[in-house]
Image (cartoon, rainbow, N blue to C red; front, side):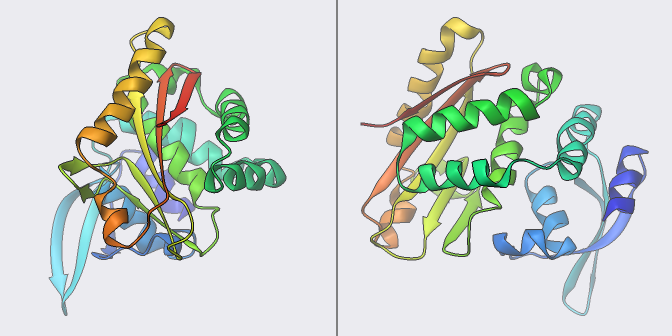
Length: 230
């Protein structure tokens, strides 16, 4: 995969098989699942498509220069960095048990130390945060299904964390970029209102999950406001 990332950063394309039904937990182990996720999330685009024996193959390239910066500053650097595994496990445990105060503290620390200021304020800032959080969630164990940008209710949610058992907490995350630091409160309120009005929880309810955490994450550069629905 490293060679393919290097090709992308040189504005080259490459051909690969695409998984049309992505299993999120495979992203860490199957390169085709990773490329498929990046394609369907808008972080890659298909220059050409071809079907062979019922399987889809695409020639992939970067969609624009701004996405290239994301790869340079977030994805490539992040693959080479080591985030404290103990802190990460602590943060994910806090999230999946609904301890928002602890999750808030650790998440803000990760943002401060791991994210580029340039990427967190650019036109693609919301995608940067989205990708950053998805990367962190890859470390959840196999007891959770992570989905992104899928339809539920009257729209498409940003991220949903679906537990394997109905008595566990299901989580919906919505991101909002604030115009400035003073607008963080309004932005996080808008994120929670969007979850409520568009009834994103319907997918969880269909699966029999009754305990749902609705989480808004608003940001202005590296400053973050996190709030759960009451």
